[in-house]
Image (cartoon, rainbow, N blue to C red; front, side):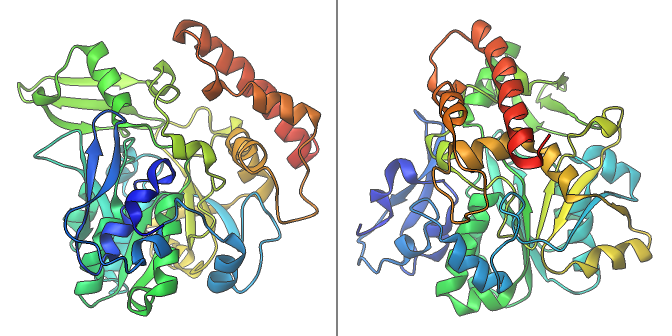
Length: 404
């Protein structure tokens, strides 16, 4: 490969190539047909190969990067290298209620900024001028950090902001999905300045990112045109949250439990079907929704947290009263994400680099063959099929991973 345009369907749309390009000729643009971001070269490429070396879509050497980051290989291949696991939430009730799940990512960034541990954070908000497109940026004030709260269920080329980190000295935190973290870790490997300036890597646990077609699908069902939208937020209003759309005419629509409407199942980028990292294993901390039976009545939101590095920050925050945390067993963490871990670690990852990990057996092959993304059937039938499939796959995963 000579440049990033040859990556094609392996592209994750993370924006690392655009953020690192020494010539500044790579731009991330929306492919309207696919509903994802793709890199476009606007200028004459000198084939320096920087974009290819940092591209996480081509591949990620987890062995090498685990040694670079943690100095060891993970004992637990489902969670990755970790120190402790917690359930936590922000002491700021408004922040907690209006975030995705407990508000801990935003609360940590606010704490790091207040304590002078960072000068800015790479985060994402919805573009106020062009909703429902995202706007990755470097937040440098508490107000800007709060503007980025909540999940963004659309493609986000977050790593385009690496250019600003390289151009502006300081200490930074970055927030991203596993693919964003992969790109940044590969970029840090080849760029010492980046490695020195990024102090904290906060990873969001991810199954997949819906394409822009998913949001268009919902807007069509609601009979709303994109031009009418003033603001859109995919999570908030308590837990597990609602899709909130505010139109320019002042109308506010709340749509609960929309993920199962087809939004989360029918619009999956091709590259997401090859991903093997659900837990953002190469981050310093990972954050997720605690999908466990003991939290079924939770209304305000709590965050599942896996600390891998910088684990003392949470305890310092609790001592200062800005958050509440309590330990949770790693087995519970696995159970809360059991289906997605099964899909990524067994169905997507055909061979593993650890001999103690449960190998793919005949039942796994059958389950993999009937994976919903492979089937082209009407949504009215597929919805029921997905529920049954998820149950069977989860039961198999519980037996393989937890012996239950």
